[in-house]
Figure 1 (cartoon, rainbow, N blue to C red):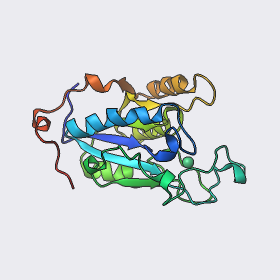
Figure 2 (cartoon, protein in one colour):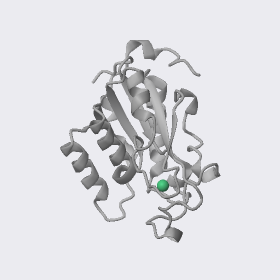
Figure 3 (spheres, helix red, strand yellow):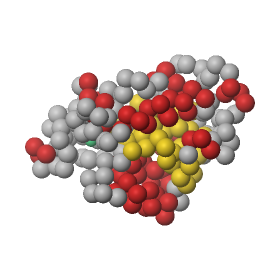
Figure 4 (tube, rainbow, N blue to C red):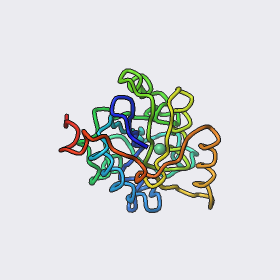
Length: 203
Ligand SMILES: [Zn+2]
């Protein structure tokens, strides 16, 4: 499949320190998505946006408030930062912060953010989703992308699952497929000729 610079976008979900090995809520092999995404960021020549989990210190998803997760991705802390190897210079602009309200959980990058409006404003029709974690925020973002009217592709080599219950990641992929999300490997993407040069303009 050939990427179309005018209408395609990469959506990087929550590639943050706390979701990688050594972080507060590590996704097994979470850091393995970084080189795959960096390659796409450098070569794909399409719009790239990134979301991040960005919680207040007393967020409702934390165990201390009866939520399912340990404290993670507290706004402004080192754990909430993007993985240090992620090629941020290639990510155009959007840092979409989600789940920023104390009493509201948000797994989807589209929930309570300007992501859909931003993408539409740029003429985006297809989004290619990668990041962390397959069975939570990637799934929710991909499903909401469909609901927002985008064609959604799942970058299967650029995602990893939490797998709280074994098989959660595979079930998530099945659920996404059932909603019309198309799994694709990054190696199956063809880059536009114009991207073979030094890469997209850094902003
Ligand atoms: Zn969270």
